[in-house]
Image 1 (cartoon, one colour):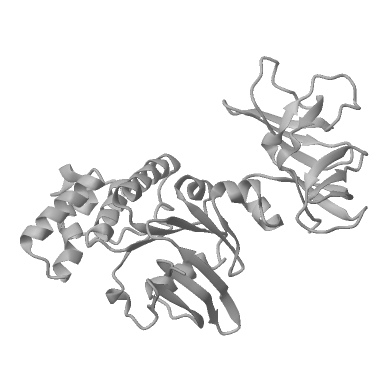
Image 2: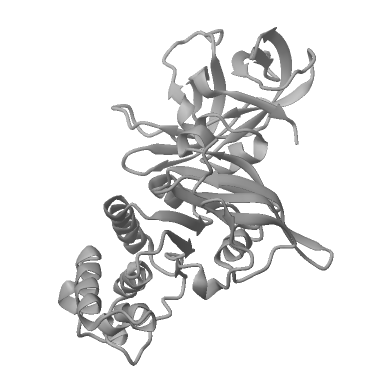
Length: 360
């Protein structure tokens, strides 16, 4: 069996009685872009710092090409690092900042000049070589930090919340640049963020952390369409969880009965008994307006509008069911008028991605 490029095996990190990381195991292929996603305190940054060598694990191992890196000092691991803070040297020009790691490695002047030129062209800052960091915008400074981290051709680039300090528009611009640089260089990237949209845009795969463990590892589509548990379903995308009773079907295809008696087909990976109390997950974009007059229309729900907001590409509704649960709904704008407070609607439900979970 071929050894993975980077392997994390049973990684754990404790601080006294507090467990920050618990039994994290994953394989990462060369050239892959893997994002560690999760809420604050979930263990994603701690895992990254152990891989970088900034922290020692309490248990487990980190292997690069089959060789343990635990006893290799951080400065000898040849791993690039980009932090939230740009950490540029304020007294050095852009070119000198990028050249710094090459000078530390005693590269020749000709090699340094050529590499600096190539790196600044890669991040589209070749016209800014002589500027000082204070003369750059935040986004430009972060691109200099990226160029510096890539200058010595590290096999792995670690990025810890690198865009958290930027505004939304600038974050999106730099996300595009990071993705482009990844495609052009083929460097293996491990990226930490708490922003799910950022993770979905950038990643080949996402490791979703919670309480020090990886809840699910897969593509963004895997996590969105086939969440392994309720935490994944609630963290990735927006979700409604409606109280229901389980009705056994065949295989993993079953039915749920809503409090008003409505039956909806849904998927469950767990074995359950008839009339078990469950929660059925329905995404806000799984709804469409029903124009049928009959309240018995299959796979539809009656709701009352509590709030309606026009957002250009969608109409966002907060609605209430007859049994008192709120539903968030996103509809495509139609030629009809925007629903108003108090309007009674029936919503057709696209049942393709409905999932059944425990109540809590």
